[in-house]
Image (tube, rainbow, N blue to C red; front, side, top):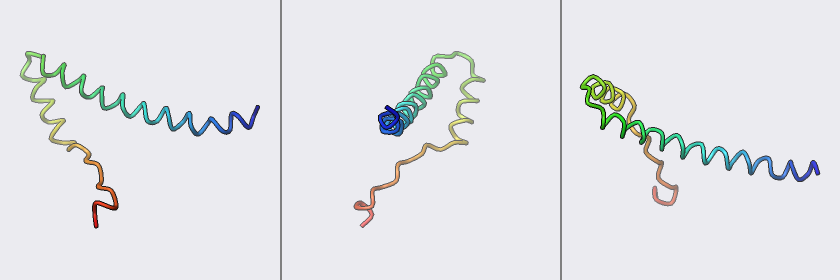
Amino acid sequence: MGWLQSLFSPLKKLWLRMHSAHKKSRGIYILYEDVKSCQYEDVHILWSILVESHPPVLPLPSPSARK
């Protein structure tokens, strides 16, 4: 049964990596909603500093789109 585990181990790692990335981006959205609903101006200022210091990551165009 070791061969079966060696077959599914990379697939399991890929599955976990894909789903953890989705949860991370969703976590930022939840945090954004919390900041929006907060009444304290300090929180909004800190959020704007955070957003300005880390620009969003844009996906790279596919190789066929570059031609």
